[in-house]
Image 1 (tube, rainbow, N blue to C red):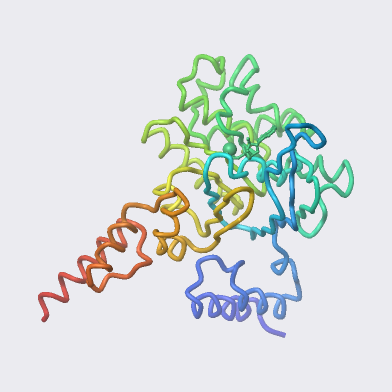
Image 2 (image 1 turned 60 degrees about the vertical axis):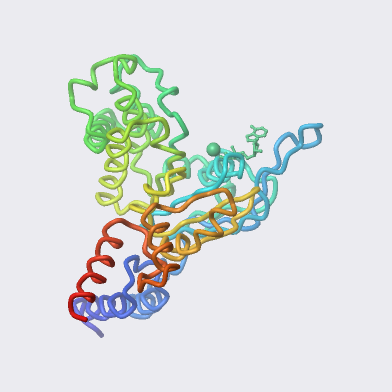
Length: 330
Ligand SMILES: Nc1ncnc2c1ncn2[C@@H]1O[C@H](COP(=O)(O)OP(=O)(O)O)[C@@H](O)[C@H]1O
Ligand SMILES: [Mg+2]
């Protein structure tokens, strides 16, 4: 029997050998974990869809297939970015992940169980998979910010003490100080309202936090604050994050993996380095790539020894410094 210390040493070795930042996505790690610990929970994706299709207004002249045959998986602890044109099906898709929309055909699984297996199962999934809508601040309606954030935990049937604890914790993640909790939501600034709405979902302590364009319409400071709130929650609860966004810079800085929707289907999927290294394909789809990726690829095309899979400013700075260093030594 291996000691716990030895088990973790072997698992760490597997992670290091693969240079893998997300162990739960590394097949070697998963297999070793299963063999050493006798558990197979890491082998199951946390959320999975199979041939998911949604048609709006069936049997009417407005019938429209919004998403079609989508096969998708997300692992525990992943930070996933979803991009795609307006109308490509992103919002329709994510509303299936917490059971808000029912598939026209296909299935959605959470930890291996069909989320529509029973009414109780679907209700429980709403708490485990928290969904923050686009412009969620329009859904603040209680008398105080505290009551708004408390709405979800109260629905979960928690005691008054637990609800309070959740509200304080969630307000902390959203950087809303105590004085603001007593105010009416209508007295808050735009950025504060958005953060209060996100806190309302975080207060349910979801295992998966899904956000539909959470920074849309905010100034750079407001956007940075929201991204910081999401990161803090992710790190504190080892949460899985799924974020729909239009901002390539935002996605480049934060996510482990990107999924691209086009006309209701997933057309590209992979680590940011591999997705952004094909900026021609992104541009052909009417999307873009982060500025650092575009510059790196231009320099590469000019014949300079700069890798095509660079996509952040620090990576680009490093590559240019390496070039300058190489020049000096030559
Ligand atoms: N409630 C609805 N009823 C009918 N059609 C809808 C509805 N919501 C979205 N659609 C249509 O479904 C398609 C996908 O929309 P949506 O999921 O909102 O895409 P995205 O979030 O990528 O912009 C679009 O053609 C849109 O017009
Ligand atoms: Mg949308």
